[in-house]
Image 1 (cartoon, rainbow, N blue to C red):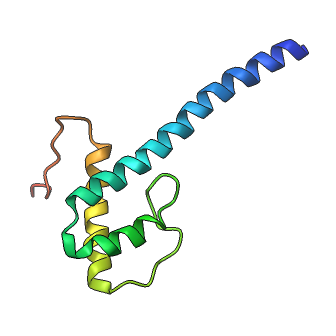
Image 2 (cartoon, helix red, strand yellow):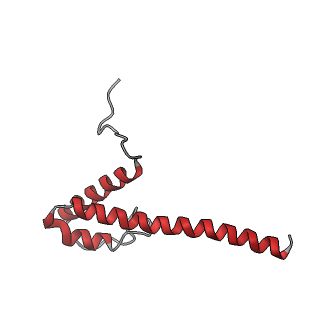
Image 3 (cartoon, rainbow, N blue to C red):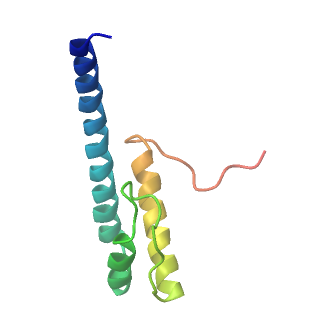
Length: 101
């Protein structure tokens, strides 16, 4: 490939990749902000400690902080529900339990 063509291809790829990286960061920030709103007040300190340990996508903890088990479970439930809502398109409703057939 010609040097100019390679440069243009790399620039085009970099622009797309940068947009996706920014979207990942915003996704994490959105999950944390929405989760904090939904979290019960007594678990907010635990929420902040767990949120600090989330990976760049906000999907899993990099390191498990030392927090009470009950509080950790409550916060993880809130984060899970928040992520589920974020993955669904607006207006889509997913039943909590699948109907038996």
